[in-house]
Length: 198
Image (tube, rainbow, N blue to C red; front, side, top):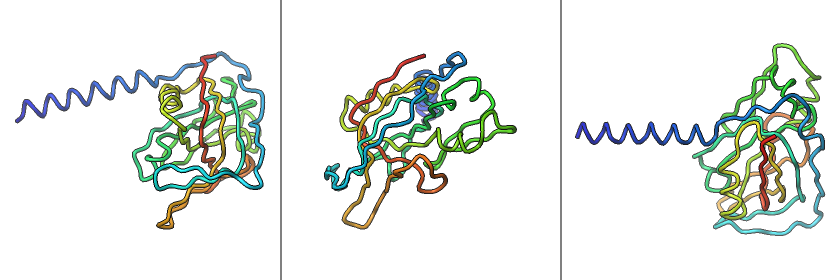
């Protein structure tokens, strides 16, 4: 029994090491890597998509190219729909020289940042970065998102959606990059995902 437990522990350690290696960060040189703001076209009458017993209503077509500031894989109640979050930055929030002075982390479906002194104005940090809950449209998109690493550029296309279930459960997307705090994250139905190492 003890030997079996040791084997299981060894396998768990190896799995963790492999996962850490696969998601290891890359460190691009200084310079703005993703200069453009996200593109959003609001929809007056969105389509309805189904994911099991969940209804997704499209609120806006959405596309962006951004730097991955952090990634977090989840196994919480929402993971069946959005298995990972990416904290993303664009404009000067994609510049290694700026990000070297900002600590970034994720937990509990939130993105957190801290700076002892601001390399750029606080409001620019808030409006040029966001935490996004990602719903892969299919297995190919899921595989692409699984390979995403901190520091890479990622291009995403799809829809901002609101999710609901007949039992009353709801999950809403932010429709603005201007908001902060609870409710400010985007819920993105991702139809296309591509990465590049700068």
